[in-house]
Image (cartoon, rainbow, N blue to C red; front, side, top):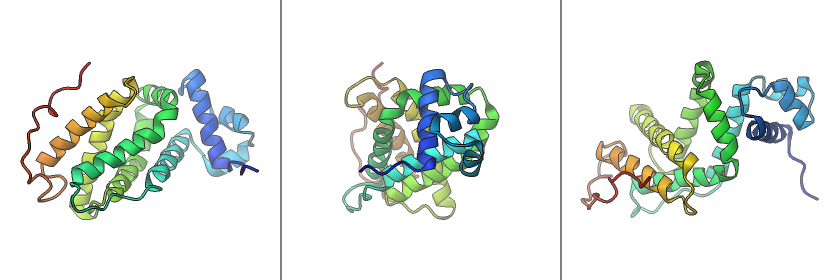
Length: 207
């Protein structure tokens, strides 16, 4: 017999359904609770704000990505490992694209919501670096966290409109952003030491 989803998962799933159906801006916590079959008291205990719902969703996606072993081969460059991890993250989001689009669209009109979500976003990006086998401690780790976050945020805009069956446009944008970070030395000494022909990769993805 399938295990019944716990309250956190039920609330996340309800919020995603409502965001897909109606957009995120008008969805209330009471409506999320009702759709999840939970009381307001139960919902408050687990998710006291709409930002908490988004944070919980981000953590669930983190867990999906982190459940796959990190690439550890010494022959694979840091840039390629980050690419692999972030594409896993897009794969984990594929079934929720409409909900993510609605949440991002409506959150863009609410600066306070964006500010509230930033700490969890940075935590998620740090863990993506950890999954890629990068050193994420100290000042260097902070720089890498922000670089991975910038690459993710830029590529997310492409992913939202990418209708290619293999996410080719998404991959092209992500590769371009990570190559730029590599040239800036973000991934550490030696990560960009191999000279290669980047001409094709640096071109803008096809419209």
